[in-house]
Length: 445
Image 1 (cartoon, rainbow, N blue to C red):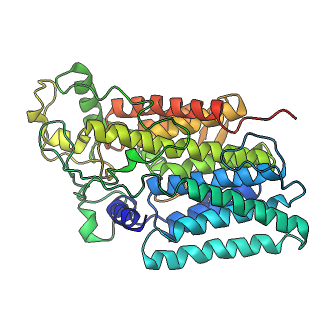
Image 2: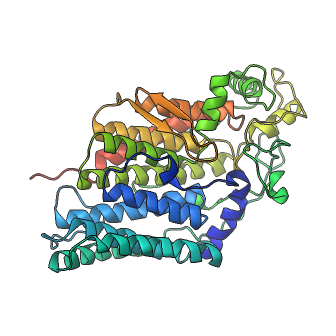
Image 3: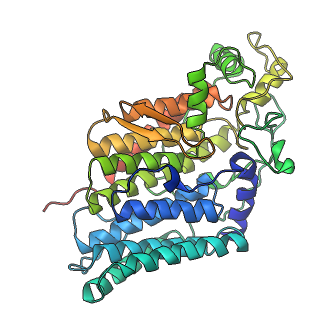
């Protein structure tokens, strides 16, 4: 994985420059060990290990599915994902969680990132493991728990060893109207980027192979493939174009203060934000360890597949971003779109095609999982944002409301067309509903 994950991390660095992924700084009180390891994994893999949000989604899915299976071996309450053992009855659950989490994290982080990043990330996982085990009394229960966790992690690492992450894909940007090509950041990057070599943007496309990664819950990455963006000459495209031009520009006179807050609030990468929402609601609902482990496993499997399916669609249609489209509006053959060669986005645009917005795909998937798990969409919660615009608190009456606002933020940021966001939600909802309906189902007692 090494060569394939280091380079994309650098390409993403202009997008996520300056982010501190220490989720605990903006997180709620933790529910139990499953939530503890969720924070530890984000801190180690993204914060210290430099994993970009796409790669992080795979790490989190692997770890949380292994945690679920390890716990399930100690008390069979749900359908297992991979590890089928019934032989760990009486084992210490916390030991099973810690061993599963540690082994997956070490297995992934030891072949990810630069040597310097590995030197920071691996000790975080090891220290967390040692701390967790020190809280558990020595004896057979602890040993059996460790063995269950190790076995669940080994099954996961073996299953994902050749999952397509290291597949080599040649990608050449297009030049025709409607085709993606490298694009600039605003002259004053938002959020700021300290490295002047990255601040200007114009980065190569990131992770063109990701649509070929083996999904966690879908039959194929193309199972819920979307119909594609509007034709350039269509009225729908003109509506999308003029909306983002009006609301998403750096100097927009029409974007409201609330819309600017929404753009900043949701600019945090999706895995961090939606995992924090899940931890918040799980803590408020006082989920027990097994239920919380199942929730985080379902959530992260769905989000990982959201990136896989979204990237398969993105590189299929290869549609240009608003900043490219608006600057070249006189080439699209649509009389209802007026070019503005100096137009700049409100926020920095990640370096990959527009359709769909995978930020919206993950929001749709996460909201569908949460609604399915709690058997209602109407769950009220507050969430405080993490970096790069940490400390903003917003309230929601439902998961779907949060998902829609998450998608709206990309238009207010100037980085996606509306159709990319709405179709992204629809794709994500299908993935989320599939995940809850078919995986980790409750077993008869």
